[in-house]
Amino acid sequence: MAIDLFDPQSFLAKVGEGRNIRNYSTDQIVFSQGDPADSVFYIEKGKAKVTVLSEHGKEAVVAIVGTKDFFGEGCLVGQVQRISTVRALTEAIIVRLEKSAIVRVIHEEPAFAELFIAYLLARNVRVEADLVDQLFNSSEKRLARTLLLLANFGKEGKPEPILAKISQETLAEMIGTTRSRVNVFMNKFRKLGLISYNGSIEVHRSLLNLVLNEKPEISEVED
Image (cartoon, rainbow, N blue to C red; front, top):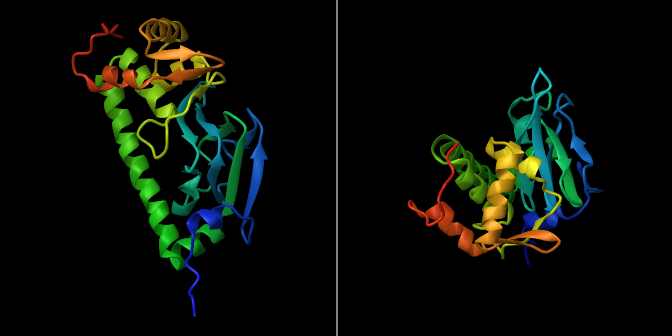
């Protein structure tokens, strides 16, 4: 008798016990800072912005998550309240898994546990790279790396254009500089043919040279 193999992607694509799927419009909040932390989310399609608000009212963008990314997993390690706000950056399809449901499937299905652990490890590498980026690179190079990440360079599948909805203010918050400096760098990248505008920001592979080359041809403007 044939044995049905567990498929994590099929599991995440279907409504079932402890999980539901919802369509989000651009700018719609998935959860807010201070909300109860009782579930984990998975993005079937689209992008979302993760922000943190300080007690003094200053907001910072700490991450952009996209297709096949999880978020909100802090509830699995005892987080009681959300420490960030997540808002859809584009139209998105997002799966919500109740804490009990995802704990159960992690314990019962090795294939799902492998998928989830692989995501967490990849994100840990990304966080370390982000820290190195902030400590050692100029804001120009940080912007180049951010654009490449947003366009999915280095992920499975083909790179994709970045929607124009990702504003220069958001990019400035992500790399720790001002909107005016981002505007200068974006104009420079466009003039050099590293990016182009056509209803969206299209990132060209040549932008990798600015990130990978220790002595890029593009002169860097230091912070």
